[in-house]
Image 1 (cartoon, rainbow over the protein chains, first blue to last red):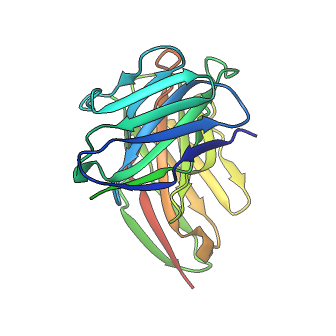
Image 2: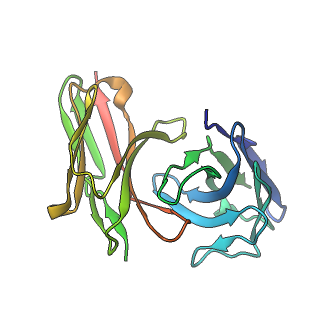
Length: 119
Length: 116
């Protein structure tokens, strides 16, 4: 149980184009999903927290107009990198928290990640 | 401010050696959780353990053990009789009680290389 998928697993796009990454909870409903970015040999940095049906909360320094997050259903969140540039090349990882999780249930289930390369 | 420090950037050991990965954290909350994750070359994060701030009991799971000491704000991870398959980046993480957000703050990671 508690499987999170991401699609695509890797993507190459040209500078200036937009790319959408999907994060799905396969066997549970997720009220909250998180998006992380990891540059090579670096740690995971939280980009934003999305709650189903409401606007995402972005971390300081993350451009909300560039990284569009939509959490339209309890099983799907999407991250769209708009007008991508080579510096956006990174490993993007999502995680999901079950709607059944209690207030003190800190469990997050991670997706396998999406490797984005912008040429 | 919350912070997780993993001072060891890279560790290299020979198979069957024991190795300890250090983790020091900072938080103002009295209620929090600490985690360890393994990230193999494939990139997918593998959950290893979660420990809440009220439980200082050490834990052992097979070759893995964890030592949580609130007095020193440390949550160290030991692998006994290391194996080549243990080679990966290991992250320590902290989650505070920020409402229902529960966002994770990750350390910088320790790259463990186990040589045959």
